[in-house]
Image 1 (cartoon, rainbow, N blue to C red):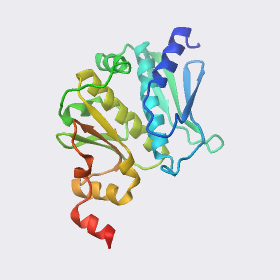
Image 2: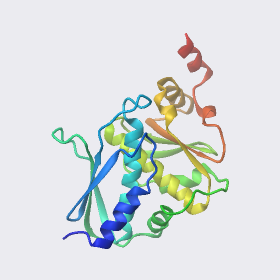
Image 3: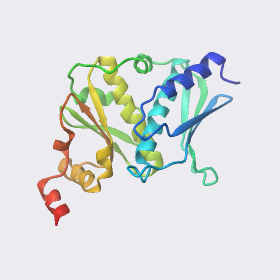
Length: 230
C-alpha cells in the first residue's frame, strides 16, 4: 500500500512547518509505500561544528511527521537505523497498522499550524506532552524545562529535538509563550554545570523557557564557573 495523495501532502507540509534551529533546513524526506525516510543533508556550520543543532532540527521535523501520520489514523513505528553504508539516514517512520489518534495527538497536530502563544504558564504542565522513549522533559523551576536523553549520540540528539518540539506544540495548544534554547548546549562547562546544579540523570540537549525567564540562571554553579576560569 502507498500513501494517498492527501496523506503524502499532509506529511510533507507538516514537516516543512517544523522549526529550524540550525543554519538552513538540514533534512529531506522520501516517501516509500507506507514509510517516510528522513535524511540529514550534509553540511556543517562554524557555530555548530558537531551538527547538534541540525540533529535537533531533524528531530522537530520527525515529531511533525509522526503527528501527521497519526492524524490520518495510522499507528507509527519509528526506527533509528545504524546503517554505516547510509549514514545520512536519520530515521524511518513506518505506518504499520490502523489506529485512531487520541485527542492529545490531534490537538498537537493542529498546533503545527498555530502561532506561538502569549500567556504565562507553568513548565510542569508541558511534561506530559512527551512520548519519545529515552527522553525526559524535566522541569528545573516554574519556567524552565530541560530536555534530557539517556545517551548522547546522534539518535539521542534527534529524539531530544522531537521531545522539545512536542513540548512546544503542547504550549501552543494552551496558548502559552515558550522559547527553545539550544545554543547554550555547545558550551560544555555550562552544560556540565546544569547537570551539577540540578542533579540531572542524563544528557541535556536543549532548554524550553516558559515566559521571559533568562535561561542563564539555571546554568553552572559558582564552583563550576570558578573551575572554568582557573
